[in-house]
Length: 293
Image 1 (tube, rainbow, N blue to C red):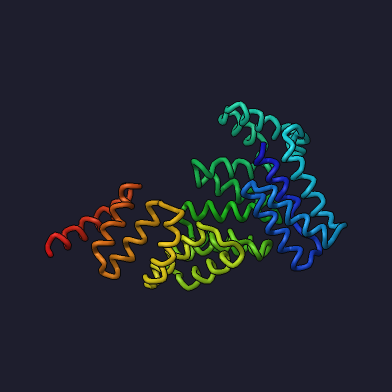
Image 2 (cartoon, rainbow, N blue to C red):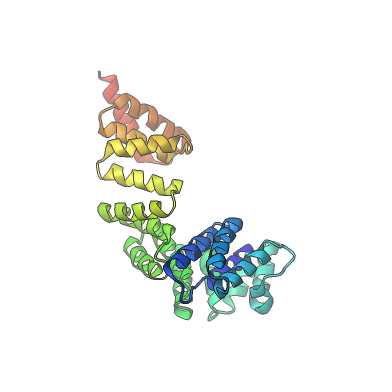
């Protein structure tokens, strides 16, 4: 149910005639909605209403958020669309098969395709991409479809398609930190390191998100800026003790021939996750080098 409400929010978030500052506030509020941070979103909506008390989009968005935060009020979208209501009833009861069948029964409905795209993101990327594309065909001006499609392309390792799609999303939301971060990730995987670095700096200028800082550190590592990368990773490791963080620290140490530290950090990475076979190989190579000394 929350997802339906969130999608309704995004639908209401298309500004009409807003000045640049109002657009910025509306984009920030929309991004907070994406993460379910509705109270934070309302802070920025109130800023809009202080500047423009008669801003229709902001008023509608605030009213929608207040409805979301009241669990007694039924979603407008599902109450006016019986087919979607049926699908979400199946979802609520845990019958995912019936949920998908109900959505698939309305193949030319925008929301049905959007929800199917979101559903398949977890288990079938090809189908997810198909339904995002269909949703865009049915409602080309709904920008969140491009963001979802861009994410699906990245997960499916179709990085150029991701860049093209995120470019489209950014024409609607030019101050979207998540879009710049996703495009930076796509550029990184294509080895366009300068483009990736430019994008991640744009994302971080908008919001200093931990996941963005990790992407920045990765880019610095692949650019060969090991000192800068390690410094940022050391700061991250105070709050984020993941396999990926320790792996990157270890690889920075390895590149700088600090083999003892590299071994220690790669060992931490392997303990946290031993799925990376190349990591085990690097660890064993370093261990053999130290044993020969």
